[in-house]
Amino acid sequence: GNLFFVTHLTQMLAQKGLLYFQESSSTWEYDIGRIKAETIFTSELSEVLIERVRALPSEVQEALKVAALLQQTTFDVNMLQRLVKDNPDFTEQARSTLDTGLKETVEAGLIQCCCSERQFKFVHDRIRESIRDKLLPTEMAQQNLHYRIGRNVLLLAREDEDRDGRLFLLAVQHLNLGRGADLALEQIHE
Image 1 (cartoon, helix red, strand yellow):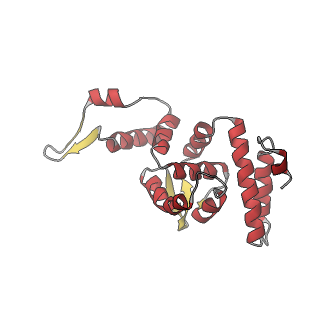
Image 2 (image 1 turned 90 degrees about the vertical axis):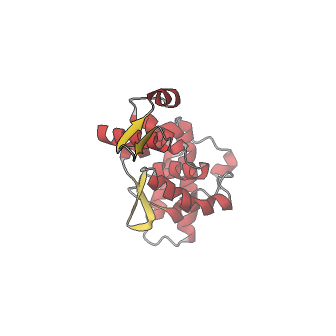
Image 3 (image 1 turned 180 degrees about the vertical axis):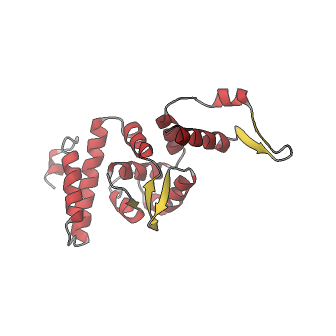
């Protein structure tokens, strides 16, 4: 809660150069005038987190939206790359820079490596919730993305010979959550 908020707020001020360590005097220094002018203060942790997410490259933001809706403890870079493949803004170049962007996200304190260097998890549930609620603010936006995730996971299940049915069940879950998506009739029958 509060410690998490203070940590992220302090990191944000330091990244903007508004809070810095003065080696000559061995003290932390700040310019309150610049802080007031350049920073929107909020008691809402979600606003601080979203400001950090919005500072990331757009392709990383898109991947984080998908990860936030996956409803799994961890997410895998390879799966994220395959799940965002139908987004027209997500080019081959964007896919290749996702690894670098996720490293920036780790450095920003939003996600952490787990299990392997290709698997990540959100540092705190509030980060996942903030991404979901602030970057996908309407129910329709969330349903549309759930539908895209479900459709792409279903394709993955077919391609990867999903023997244990795990991917198929994940696809069904997301297709159900996306059933109100704003889709053309021909897309539904695909």
